[in-house]
Length: 467
Image (tube, rainbow, N blue to C red; front, side, top):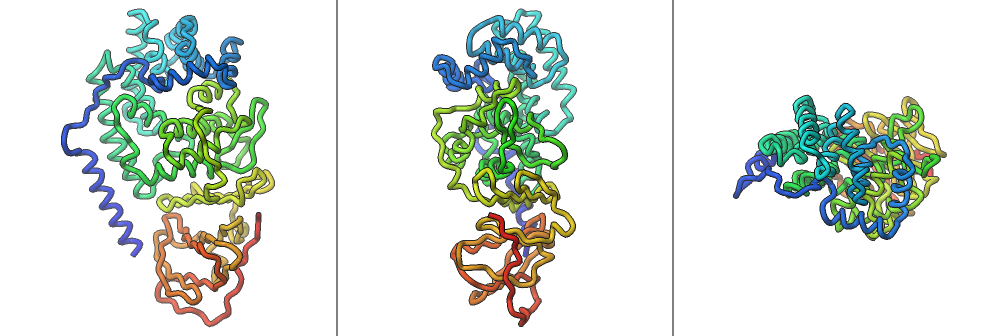
């Protein structure tokens, strides 16, 4: 049954991809008609940011302090060009231009300078920067990682007036061949084409294409993007990481060494830009409630420009305490569970073919004997298949059980006392999700089809309880 379902999903994916590449009605437009600034600073956001300056918001004050204090900015051209757009101080715009002319081109940062500081460019400077952009497009044309694709899209949009045919070609290939032809089918087939440390690049790509082409990339993967806000919350370890400038939430990583605070800052920026992308989505309003806490406000020379650019403290957020404490992506098999929303919570993660437990402020890789111990986290239990014979659930509260380590994409018969047997399917990582939304005391047995129920008395679930 599971194999048939997977085959059907692949067929539907292929059909959907063909349909996306051949839209009915008028041919899709890939020409850019918007006025500069085109990249991220569309009129509505630019008005918001300039009001932030007038109101002397905390985010503006931090950004201004770094810029006027001549702090060493890790992305100096990006920061100076943004400061010029908000203040109108041409000296900062010229600094950004000179940096872009004098240094090896980072295609993304170069695109922002060309777009945001275009009015200050002399003819020779514009020609030099345009040449750099074209060279960057040519040298990266074979790369398919999302960060590079994002940068190519920004460069194409920035060059649209000078090189309209080149821009149209890059944008068409990105949307039709790369996104619809490769990324969307991979998502639907359970792949992971968008690594978690590339989420901010994804959001920049979505903003740039919708702002300038009115193309909505989410249409091909509605469920993926509906789940994304919850994923961006649950992927983080519960305990905040204290740094001199501010607290950080740390997304799951391999656990070796200290966390990368640049990646942590970009993960926060990804969440802020996702909220800005669709402020009306209920899931994004929960994410806003999670993000808009002043102790996590990015104050470093790297993070402050992103914090100022994307945060909207006036956007109402909902309490994330109403968000479920577990995230299971049946497509990819990723699973994240935490015992509560408190900083002291225990957290479990199954991702990238690894299992981790975060407890008492420490990351522990689960392997060997540790991987065979059942873990109870609030209303969810992680139950390794190696320990599974037959178990009981209590009637105290609703329960969700994740049985891990099963055969991937395989069917299993589920038998619950006093209920009819039903079939369920493990995901691509071999995880089976069982939900018991109504508190009930019953024995449960999970087995491959065709195996009879044993007469042995059921035993309680051997869970080590962590609350």
